[in-house]
Length: 115
Length: 114
Image 1 (tube, rainbow over the protein chains, first blue to last red):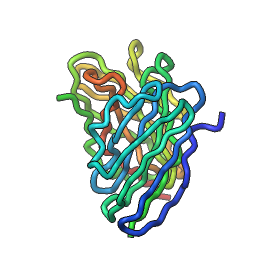
Image 2: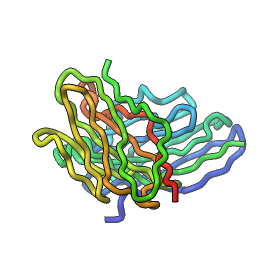
Image 3: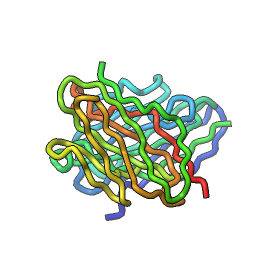
Image 4: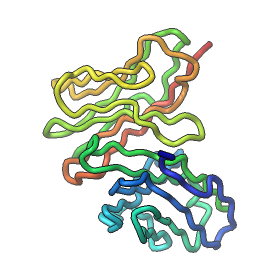
């Protein structure tokens, strides 16, 4: 298995631009998580899905952030418009209920820089 | 409220020395606990996990962790560290109020002296 795949690995954009981050979870996993990691705030859960349905988006910082999971093998996290304070590493993770319970498998992350 | 605390932001040890990274948790019932490692520029990788049973848990890369309910800790250990162990280590526990949300510690950065 290729593991969780994220693209792009690095994104540099200017303030005000739309940014779309992509994630392909491990095949067969039914939970998908989006995290943000910064030096100041550490690892923060933004949103998670179960069977493609958003379950908890209370960690999404504001309306500029949105996430979708149109099918079991793809999810996007969109920021529109982007701001410099959105600069962070964004991780996607997936897990399978009943296999190690909450064991989450992480992708390599997308490093976002907003100028 | 449930919490996971890693009291050490940085730990420096010499190569070949033993290692212990601390993790304290605050839960009512027996929690599910995890240790993850993040190498520079990489995602997080699971080292080991505790669900129930034996209080000494073996993981990958020669790591182990001891769960001690009476003192609410889940400390990570390694008898002899290697330079490749330099990374950031995260302790996490399952949130009983939200079955699939992990509560994460702030992380401990391990620095290895040659």
